[in-house]
Image (cartoon, rainbow, N blue to C red; front, side, top):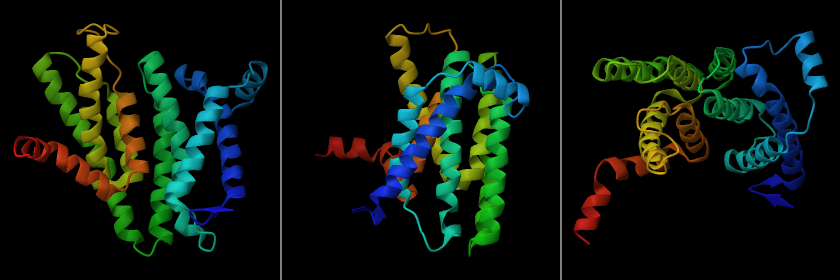
Length: 258
């Protein structure tokens, strides 16, 4: 049985892989948050001692991996055509960690950001080497690194001047910058726009529901993560059209002249 030209057994294998990765994510989140080493003898001893099933992460990653395989697809004949798919398999667990840690501890650990940067850099060069349009893709990804980080850094500086305090953590700036290595200029700009749009709406909801006070800090990392997931699962052309429809005022024009 095939779905989107992919055999159901491959979906099962990928789903089980997602469950395994989900367990690893659950075990590593605390280490990331407490700035502990990930790859060391002591780390493996501590994780073994504190071992417990992380069913939520296992289920979540299993489902996400299966959906990712269906949406992105896979080319069995040309392995290098699956560079983006493989990079997403590695990026998504780190996005989940960033989401959970930022909500729980209000930080995005440098160790986690560095890991995302390292993986993004590897796949940027892999695209440059193996992809037929590799040079332009690699240049786009490297530029996306500076554009993504630059957008958030500029907003942080301007917001700090206006508000008289830090408007956004530097962890968010570095986080978005590293994501630029995966998505390039166009997509990282759309991710930035979506994160502010989603952040504004949800922040209002959070304050109205009295989950946070107006002067309390609301972690921005989760909004970036949600926007990144949207960029992964929705084609950039469709996503651009949706954002254009929202921010160009086209929806308002249609509403008025119905």
